Image (cartoon, one colour):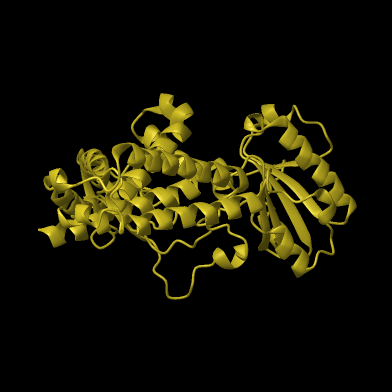
Length: 410
């Protein structure tokens, strides 16, 4: 049993830490997933606190996994993972049966699982969790309680700080389809030989006041006594969906100019604001000033938003506002406003308002080396991530040497 408990602590600890990390890398993505669930279960009134709930969730996942794996406050960590599993295992079964949201989001955008895959993953994981819970009384402190709580508190603070910096400067690792280096037209293509959507068509006919359903194989094509009433088409099997399948840019006249923008051989900077009313006015002003500079430098510039006409009428600054789907815009960049730099359909730059390079660095003649410099992750985020990673790894390694007797008694 001792070996089984050690194996269980490693598996549970790693899975929960990984789940917390990938969510913390993209806090807004986790909040958007909460919103999907709120909408599916008619809990829209909770949307204003979705980001707070997201932070609580991924912090609880990470710190519970860390406690289980390291041994610092192991009993509390075991209780934490057990409570989370008790909540989410039946929930994922409900999601698998009803399928209100196609992707559970349990591993953020790093790994996509269907609801049934998520449920069976939880079934396996709860077995290891039960093993840990059954042996929780054998867990021993590896340091004094005060010291262990200090370690846990410090890790929580560092982890929340990590999430906050990813929120401000964009993700340290971009798991989204619109990452720098992606060629959007290529990512929208369906490779040859990939399966297409499969549909089943049903035809409803009526005869002598009785309605009956037919298929393509047996519908009464030559029997005029049957009267056609309706046709139903149902998706039977989902085909291949390209990584990018919903990119559009709608002009004020209703024309989709996405192909035109993607085919442009020069640089085009797109300022993206999912909702202008939700953006900081100073950040919008900064973006508009950058737009004036870009156009004066011979670059293309456009503003893309999901705001309605009433909201757009408030802005009379000489820019043409193009519109797109709100969900797509939030997928493109996790910032409001955010920026996407294109060159012949390829994403060569992506920034939040906080990580946006000075406007003087933007020109129609930018070189690859200049772009590489402009695309470097924020030093604050990069150094912080490195520092926190080293500290967490050091704590995990050092736990192996602190009171090794505690492990032998588990």
